[in-house]
Image (cartoon, rainbow, N blue to C red; front, side, top):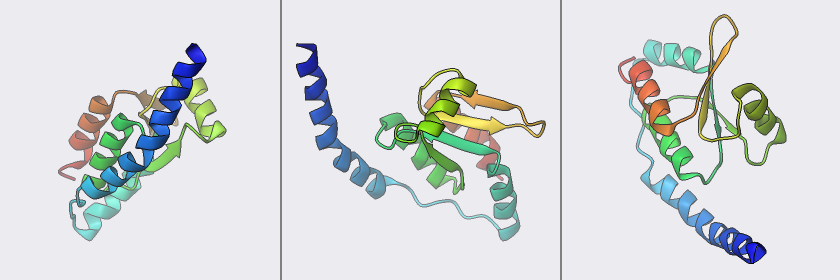
Length: 130
């Protein structure tokens, strides 16, 4: 019985995946515009950030839309299909849960932020008026 349930949900995911990705493309907002100098500063600061995510996770889609709206060039790391990124998330972050924003401090230490609302709040506070 468990195997039937597992295959049922895999089938549902397989069917919904293209629709979720199309909806993301259609509903992603246009990025805010900054002056050249301000955008260069933002791009430099974003080099310290990376988002561990699954392509079709609804919470990851929510964070990616906000990243696009804020016009942030944050590195996206696929923790679902890339074993290296999955291992980093598990070993360094403590668990495989997405979305997860890795914030590298100047000292080299990393902070791992897991909740989509927390990530969005952090990005807005740091970059919305940059």
